[in-house]
Length: 104
Image 1 (cartoon, one colour):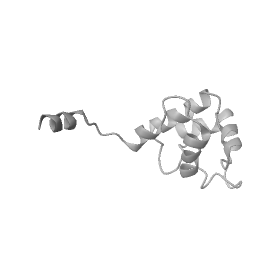
Image 2 (cartoon, rainbow, N blue to C red):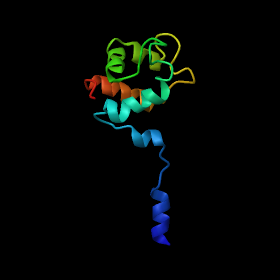
Image 3 (tube, helix red, strand yellow):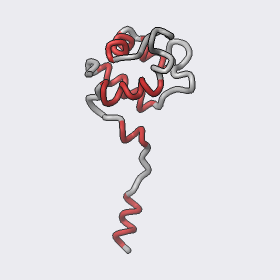
Image 4 (cartoon, helix red, strand yellow):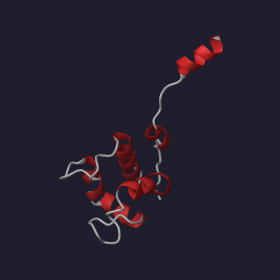
């Protein structure tokens, strides 16, 4: 009984977002790419919308010139994606990826 009570008290609710976002060294392949694919490349690939975000080189370029980060932060016009701002944890992870040198 005491063991099960200790277990229940020590458990905390953790969201998928908190589990999947690394605190250091996010990479495009493991972390950033899946977020961009799920949230951005449906509209921003194949030249249909600027900037094109269909692959690593394009996402890196958009991050380097400021288009990606200002749009997901909502600091340069309407926030992207159009269905709502990404979680702050996701935005922070993309900013960390940028700060760490766009690791593929």
